[in-house]
Length: 447
Image (cartoon, rainbow, N blue to C red; front, side, top):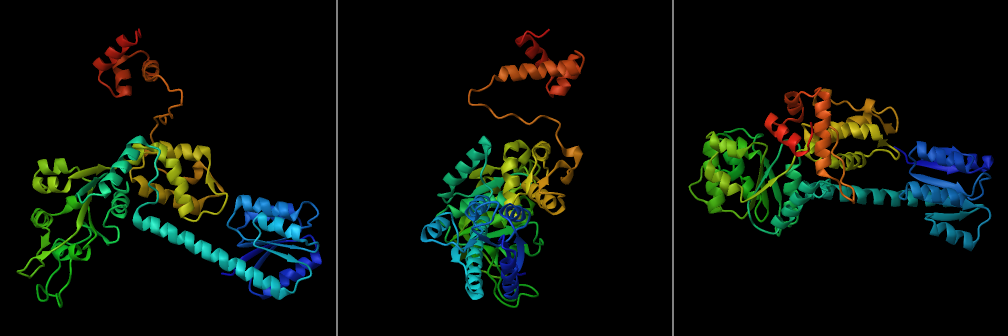
């Protein structure tokens, strides 16, 4: 796809000649005859480069330059003029112009300047994408939080990162357990080594031992050569065992031995191999309950949960939803000006997000594709209403503070009003036992 150039010049004949020359050079052109028209086209389109004259009739070209740089600092702007001076050139460059070209100019000079400007834009774009990919791989993206419990969790994770302790990350599906594991790895002394991730549910039971510990040639049908397991390939680094709760009991025993002895025995071999890895495991199951039901080894549980890290579900940290939604808009390459309306964001904050952050990202991507305008409205968001909480969003605490007792008293009065004074029904609305409600009524002197 050819790069798009927005050309702003009130001289119609020169505009047509320039448009023809640049089109011949392989660029796509959008043209405007005034500064205001140019800024309007810039907002509605997404040009890769802007060329603007200084004298535009309705406004100064340097004003256009400044407006574009305020909206999109990364877009290069070439300024052309027939009334050039050193002072004007310095001012244009100070405002962020990529180049300053005086008329008359030959078409090769302009074409070459456009090519260099677009090459610079491409390099900057590659750098941004590389930084984003590094963030994704290292687990540092999307981990900002406005929730106190999540902030404490991240602080603990960073403290733990410097140790060699085994970590157990728990949380519902889609909460970002692997992202947190990568954050721990990236801030650990092993960050120069690999982080090898294994999804224990994705590997058949008859192959999981070979995948983890490796095998020797001839160990089973199809074993045509020696093969290293994930423990060996993660040497000097971190082994991330996702969905650890799905392992069968016999495999749990072998995993426990590998972790305790720091050695593995490849399938078909009678010799053990020393391994140097740090283990981070993750599960969406309650391993306490699994141990009680005899489905998970108690000794393995305690071996894994030296440092337990629990990620709260998104519905328990709704204040993070706006930042995460806007993060995903940017990550998915939303055009400038695309954003959620206040009503749309309010709807998203009320939704319970059973699929957590993964579901939120998918929803943002769907909105971005199906939106009717740049402002994403509630009608553009497809959420199951049954899973949308009717409870009000918990307010932020103002700097001057607020009275918890007054809030509690107000909720009790509303419940009594809604239940026409029926205490049992009011208690059900508040999801508390009736005797607790009666105690509160006496405490607040509510008749």
